Image 1 (cartoon, one colour):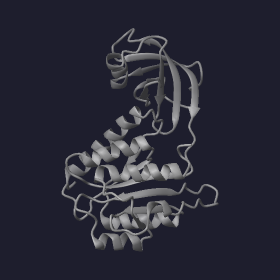
Image 2 (cartoon, helix red, strand yellow):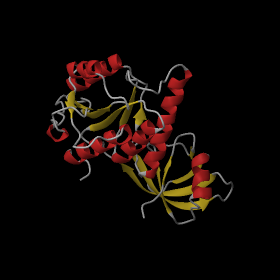
Image 3 (cartoon, helix red, strand yellow):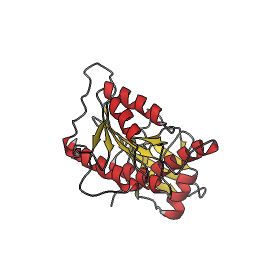
Image 4 (spheres, helix red, strand yellow):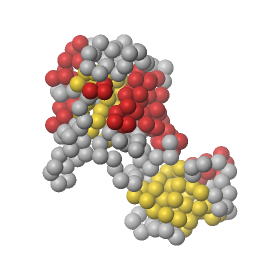
Length: 268
């Protein structure tokens, strides 16, 4: 069985996380992560545990002193330090806000698939609205969902949930993405172009150029309007059909991302 994953930060790990941490280092995980390890996972001395920073660093560790001095302190010894390389393309989910927690379900599953960035989209037919204080609360709720899903999936990278985008802001984002060699697919049940024919992203040759983005746009329960489709296509997005069946907003994005991840060799 794979080792459980816990998130380390400069605030929850002693000594602070940094380049100096290497094999043989002794660390103490503190706070809620340590309490979860001790009270829920009931880790014991000698058991394996992975500590990750959410940005690709994984410390493979052995538990040395579980709760010896307090119930929120887990002592570990680093066995191996691994800097996981970034994949050649950055999977991105652009998810319209949805009611009933379906958008959070999409965030959770897409994180398990391997998405790196998540953009909430306030489409015109969204029933759920993030206005005023709800903007920050909704974004934080999605970020917490992605964080817990990343731990469940044993990932060393936690997807970043960005601020909600209007359609105009999303079109501008798509335009920049395509200019940098990325590909954006808009899922639509009436599209004639199959997802399988989507072109692959084209990485730029310039030194220090960002990795190309491979993004999927998922509309709300009421669908994407013709005006929104036109705006995204004019920005460079490609409208595609996912398959022969109509999927819910919670499942369409993760399924499409899984297909694309396999095609890009990210699951090899």
